[in-house]
Image 1 (tube, rainbow, N blue to C red):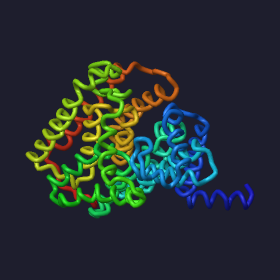
Image 2: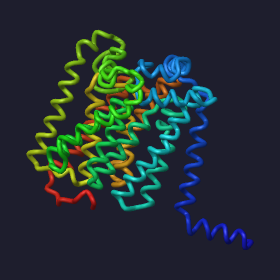
Image 3: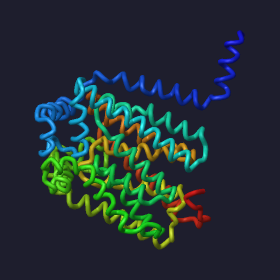
Length: 396
């Protein structure tokens, strides 16, 4: 071996984690690039027409709603139209950048909890190269990594006991996706059980949303739009489930609008009741959500509960759940099966929508998903509600 080779290998050995980070990032980006030319149905039917309208109208178009995404996303799309590139590349570049941000937020959270650079790097790698993450951005041109990344930052700041930054991050997340409501129950649980935050912190969320929408309001947008866009979204599609294998996929045909009208109100009430029962049990058992393991497991369960019982759930709405399960599996290295199964269930949904390939029927997949939900509920009860455990602070 030559001296140069010795120097190269010595350098790699001394900086193996840094080298691995660079290599994983390069390969992760390369994997994402494989899907840049793919045009999904959403891009053809929605994203591309929205782009054309926003580009034709210009900045004045921010005064009116284009599409059904919130105002901050419309502002970003307007900015992207100012550059000479195709809408397909623009949308996907934005989403891929936030895939990297998401992977970084996962790594930051894992490093804070585990105190291990190795585990942090593993979590970063798994997230960046996850097939559902890749399919979501570089194939589908969707942007779920944006709101999930800020949720992970919110959890990170809560662990650091920086409550205001935590809720600011939740506000940013809410400004991009209504699905932030999947994580709000665990913050409410934390508020009730640990009494370390104020109810006033929750008002930061709509305040941040309002601030991020303010450029459009300044240009003449109706202030009411800030609060009504998401209300209109909840009624979009009018299907009780939309390729999401939750409890309703096991019960009925999602394409029949009659079931939407029949079960919508019940789905909301049922979700609230289930979450309320768990909160009461945790109050009775004096559960400490300052314990990071308890907090993450509860966050997983509340997210899964919302997906399992709320109406009009899409296959993409498991994105947050999948990422939280990856974080939990890497940190605690137990119960890896839920992370694998839930990510595969999500992958099934992506393949069905993007490539029209049905690996399993929606009914059978729903049975698997329900079984996994029951298993995670069992773990939550076994690990949190039954044993008396030593209190561990968030910083531990």
